[in-house]
Image (tube, helix red, strand yellow):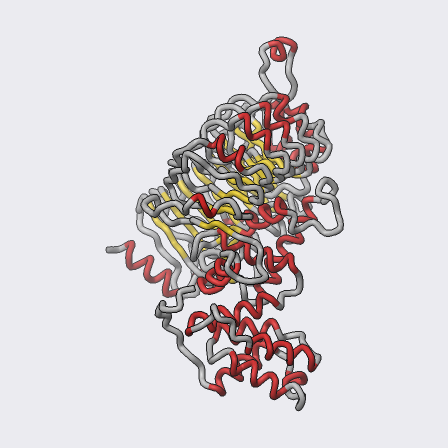
Length: 594
């Protein structure tokens, strides 16, 4: 495993190694025990001064109090496996020790799973958890049909936290809250353990992720024994004309290949045991009838594809729990037979699809086989997560009359809805307790938007686009306490976003396409949280604001400088900040005046 590869590693001295290990273990009483101290020193010696090894092994030993546990650790680290030689391999050996000492098999499976993503890739936490739910990693003492999605998601995030605590998974650099990544060497270890060459590890992965279209696809002779296959993010992928039978494959990740060439029908007939299938952002324009053969499938993602209709054979996926069809803008028809048999479906996300739903069908509609309507979805008893685009008043009224829909709604877009008044919108928001994403666009009567402290407490993203909005009000203590992303575009009557200064957790703000906005925050007394507006802000993007003169009329702590930040009358401006550090703002200002 790369025994001749040169890896630059800054080694620590013996004293520095002990100090780092001691700090990581965080247990003075244990390390000062005269029986354990010599064993702990041997453990440190085996780490060879390698910081990553010291940290991961230290975390693995943090709660070990028994003499027998420390003896076992020394023996494990002294085991000179023949396939481990050289500097990089010593790191892999230490990481393998930490991996083996994870508390559960589930944690080990979850860590290995992360190697299916490309190297140095920042993994979306929610995406990862959705995969894990599909794989059954979050099911604890429950049948998959009875497992609650909220509890499953909570367990998934707990698994991520446990792997972070073990220093085997890192927080993302671009977004610490929502993304995680594998250290390159940890990924190397995971790929080594799943290569089929390590005794005791029978899971074999086939990974060809972000290798590029010019890289040759892995030989089909390796497909047959694979349990998980990832061809993620290659942009262009040429599938072999003949795909071998893969009786053990439970995972196929093909997302991020919009120019894929090949016959998908052969894939589905050759991988009958799939549980997780991601075809998002691929060139697939039609699901073949053979999709119905995947009766074990629990997760299917066809987002960002050019599909016009769904096959009725989709209804044969009787174990499907999650169906994701976001941004399928060409979708025009969903046969009733494709949805109604999905009795175990718990999560359906069609947000951004702009699909033209009807609340119910007339007799003439039924005769023309117009497909499923919203009232048909209401018959899916297991549905607990829903993402929809609503474009008519009838659909909105029907949705609000259904307790199942209001309780399940997580992602909602209201687009060109006639008759949607501020009071009607207020009532709608009050009924959707678990709404996470709200998009309002081109609704001609929404002139005011009001949020109270007890409304949409789970809302994470708010997008306002092309509305006649002139006023936004946030009332009560800690309103919109979970909101992290705010995007406002083309709401020309809105003169400022001073109200947003009260949002305690906002991390990202995008304001664009305002003809007359001169100040972002207005007035001498700006609403603040903890002494300054936007205490958690990481990114602000200001675009196409020709009249914008300043962020605020007076200096505010947000910029951490003595003078307010003045903006030129520019058509495009962007501030990227990590807790709004002064040096970054200075660089931005300097660039704007060159």
